[in-house]
Image 1 (tube, rainbow, N blue to C red):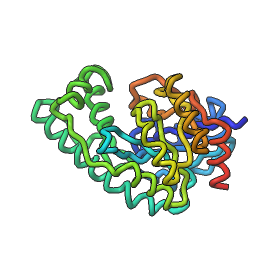
Image 2 (image 1 turned 45 degrees about the vertical axis):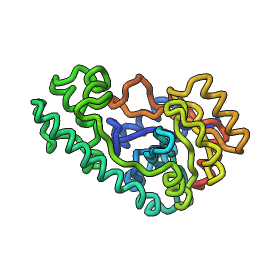
Image 3 (image 1 turned 120 degrees about the vertical axis):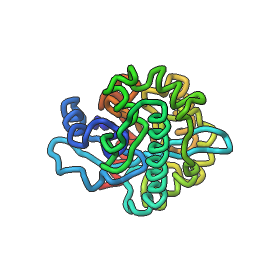
Image 4 (image 1 turned 60 degrees about the vertical axis):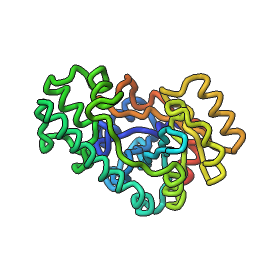
Length: 270
């Protein structure tokens, strides 16, 4: 059985581990293959080094929102043959997220937090995420932890930085992957409880569902397996590893793809 973690993030997006650090961690944890699925970018595709002892692939996690039903949708893309097609959709999201973060920094500074945007880590050397803002605040003792009460009251629940950008629709996210020759997988449905859109996405070409993930509980697994069987979708899994930019303790390889998902993804790039 091939041990494959199909979902993790590097410093190219909102992870705290570099690509090389992810590869080393995956080797230490006995994995045969990994897919680095950075948010809304395939820039990591050209940054993955030649590596012995483990297969390292580039994927993507496209951020979307269903404004009709009022929930987030994250779409994983694998085996993408024409990355420029996908990046036409996701590049505006990167730019909008960065602009949004600069606005949040401005507001926080008006409240005395003294954030120097020029000193923040930037995804792929360009884009500031909320995680980078919070990491700076924690490192300077302005907030006690990454995703505790401070985060919930400032960035959520009507706080001073509780505003977001406009995201593509789930169908746009799906098409950005499929039109690029890729495989589209609905990520961690248990988190967003967005199961109701699976039938329509399946009709439009959805290939798989992420089963093994730390937010998918036993009830979610039952629902995901039922939809997979009904619509002929393969099953994947992954740690969704973000390093210290994650609110839960999870390591590379803690959650693995199902054999059918491994075969589909590896055959797609062979």
